[in-house]
Image 1 (cartoon, rainbow, N blue to C red):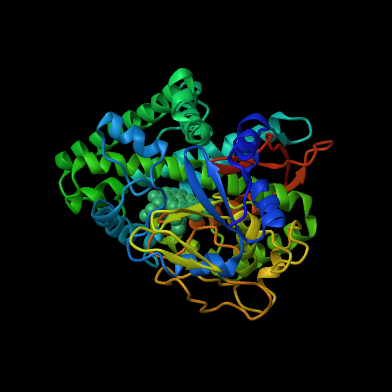
Image 2: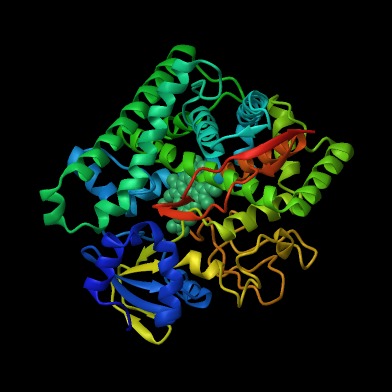
Length: 496
Ligand code: HEM
C-alpha cells in the first residue's frame, strides 16, 4: 500500500504544522497516493480511506460493537486516574449499557424534543446577548461569535445533563468568568489531544508539559461534572419523583442503575462532546449565510412563512410549545439543508476511525489485517468534486435537488449501515458526507445537536440580518481534534 515515509510524515506533522492541517493532508494524500494509503501517526500505523465506496465497505464490516481507537490519550488519562470513561472512550460490554440508555434518552425519534423547553430558553438568552453586544458596537459587529456560541453550548448542555443553570450568557462577570474556565478546559483537551497522540512517548516523557496540561484539563472537567451530578442526585433524592418535563441525562442514567462512577465518566464526555461541536457548526453556518446573502434571504423567507402558517418558529420556552416548534423546524427543508451543507464543508469530526478487531477485512484491493487502525477521511470525501460539484462552494440547495428533504443514510435513528432510504438519485454518494457517523457507534447527541442548531438559527435569523464584518478576510478551518475556525469569526448583526 502506498504512503509517505514515517520520517516525512512526522516531520510534516510536528515541524510544518501538519497537526493543524490534518484535514488538508487528507486531500493531498488522496491526490498523491489514491483513495487508500498508509501512514504512521506517532506510534500508530493507520490506513487512510478517502473514497465513499471504500468508507461504506469498512463500515459494513464493523460489527455490533465498533471500536474507534486502539489506544488514545483520553483512555490513557482514564487509566492513569483510575476513573471510568464514557461513550467516547468505552468499548465492548462497558460501552453497551450506557449507549443503550443514552440512545433511548437522546437518539430515539422525538426523544431530544423533551429538551426543547430548556434549549428554547437558552436560545432566547443567546439572542438577547447578541442584541446587547451588537448594540454596543457602532456598526453592529459582534466580535468572535465562536466564543459566544461556546457559552451557548455550555449553558444548553449543562441544563440537559444536570438541570443546572450556569449563567454563561448573562451579564454577571463572575458567572461568565467561572464558566469560561470550563470552556478553556474543553479547548485545552481538544488542542492537546493530537499533539499528545503524535509525540513519541520518550519525547513526551522528556517534555511533560503538554501531557500534564492535557490531564489537568480533563481533571477539571471531571471535577465540574461530578459537582453537578452530586448536586442533582441529592436534589432528586430530597424531592421525590420528578415533575414531568423536569428531567436530565443524569436522571436517565441514575434511573437505569448505571454506577455513579460511570455516570461521572459519561456526563463528562457528553459535556466535552456537546460544547464546541454545536458552537463551531453554528459559527460556520452564520459565516457562510453572511457571505451568501441569497441563501440567507431564502432561509429567512422559509422561516417567516413557517411562522405565518403554523407558528413553527415560535420562540416560546413552554415545554409543549417548544417541542412542537422543534419538530416543525426539523421539517423545514432549507433549514435542514443549510445545516447539512455547513457540515459537508466543515465536518466537525474531519476524520473518524475504526479498528476492526476480530478478523482481517477487505478494503478495495487490499486485505487489511485485524487490529489495524483505519482512518475514515470524511473531510476529503465531503469535498470531492465527483460527488459535490464546486465542492468548496456553500450551496444548501444541492441537498434539495430532488424535491425531497435531502435525507441521507443515517438520517433516521434506526438507519443501519447501507441504508439509502430517502436518498435522492444522482451523482452524490450516501457515504460521501457523514458528519454524525453511521451505525451502532454513530453520534448519540445528533438529535440534540440538530435541535439546538435549528432553534438557534431560526431565532437568530428572524431577529437579525447577518453580514460579514467589513474588511474581514476569509476564515479557514483548522484541525484541533475537531475542525474549528482558524481565526475568530466576527459578524455584523443588523436588527430586522
Ligand atoms: C454538530 C454537532 C455534532 C457533530 C457533527 C457530531 C459528530 C459526531 C461524530 C462524527 C461522532 C463519531 C461517530 C462514529 O464513530 O461513527 C460522534 C460521536 C459522539 N457524539 Fe457527537 N457530534 C455532535 C454533537 C454532539 C453532542 C451535542 C453530543 C452530546 C450531547 C455528542 C455526543 C457524542 C458522543 C457521546 C459520541 C460517541 C458515541 C459512541 O461512541 O457511542 N455529539 N459525534
